[in-house]
Image (cartoon, rainbow, N blue to C red; front, side, top):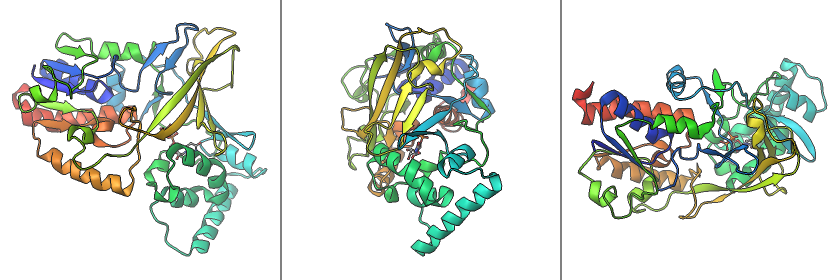
Length: 388
Ligand code: UDP
């Protein structure tokens, strides 16, 4: 073994695939779960044959040509474009906020410039009322982008359910992921390349690891005894660690906060339950944040006319035994993270990466791009300089 990769998510698998195929390294990848792919994992529901994204809908999108070329080596993509709707007080609106949302909400027929002027006036009123310079919180950023009425309707309740954290204390970066558009383009993502893997995430991932120099070991815990455990490998082989960074250091600087998701999955006896793949629920009195209906992710497939798989998504704070999904990033978390980063620099044989290893929310394409950077700027020069 020339390299141990801990974690078979998209970050770890990209590192492993490139190191095996381009550098000729023998790479072992371990994962504590019984399947590879991290949260980008889908399987067919045995009863209906519908492909279910086991960790919630995963939509592939990127404007990075290098990432797009790379992933297309392992899978083709459909021309699926993600569109989301949101329910507020018994009415359905398009999401992200666009001219359609604005005109429906204000019962108006504004053109782009009129809508811009309205939102700008609302944001200015707010700035005057609070009398201050906006801080870098989610609430401040959102209100300056969309004004108070749209914020209260579509963001406040949803965000309260998703984070259970005062939006004044959440970083603005959380909301920066959502565009606001002054036209009727209601695609959720604006990226150049978008789509879903034609035969599913599982098939894509299987092809990525199909290499004679990649040894994948599932159900293998890095923190247990054994030949691939921390005790046996630390200092003996270069390691790319993509698990939770606080866990690696035995929580020496305290626990980093994570949100986890629970999915209540049911088979409904209808051919179409909600008419779209994701319906958000903006109001705080509905306990779930959104409902996924997986058949709509693949409209090009033939599906059962009288059965559909839906999953209600609930969000809560993660305990140690839960799957971590979203880093909370409270001020205390950010302090702890700095301490973990300092500890990480004292482990030169171990490189930390991926969503859990860096405590950063990464979309799939970001995880892949960040794995490229790790291989090119860290692994090759530090551990395998003669390999290129
Ligand atoms: N958000 C919201 N209302 C919505 C959708 C999103 O308030 O209908 C906010 C919320 O704070 C959420 C953030 O925007 O955490 C990012 O949303 P996104 O859909 O990108 O999150 P993901 O799909 O990755 O969970």
